[in-house]
Image: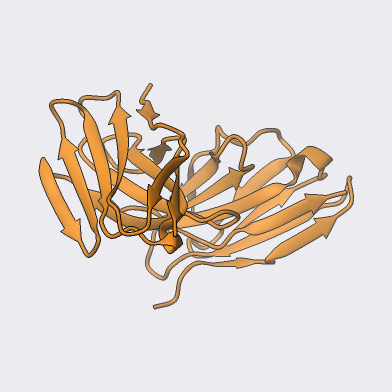
Length: 112
Length: 112
């Protein structure tokens, strides 16, 4: 049974700071990892995904993957109040990537 | 770039009635997923399709729930008869193989 764990938060950071969101997963064989953002009352939206160890940058977002530690993180630079949302980490349920296991999400609050 | 279309946006119905929710996935996405978002338990996978075939519907809470995707494009989720506990947001997602899921805006169902 695959598990994905996240700190539920809330994580509060001041505007302009770096927000660091963490996710651990149980299946050492997991190959790909996805980050979603979900605003209150809205559906999740895909932010980025990462397959390889190391960092992947996209605008103000950086995903970091460490397969040895079974740890994936999302950094948000220059945090804005509009970044306040719940961030979900997701891992494919099987090697075919047909379905995803979602973490419980971390609620981020960026304070102006 | 057209996203996922779900209809209706909001459905209010009485206990015992039949509810039919519709999802049009992103064109060309062969995988389609139905989730229920209660905002307490998070995203709960109900069922998913590859083309017109149901791959997994183990998440359907009871036999009152059924999903179809007759021609491999749009899908319907039917609840018959609806109960008050079914009130939630029903979210459709779609994807290509080996990519993240893209989520629709959801249908908010209220059963009175």
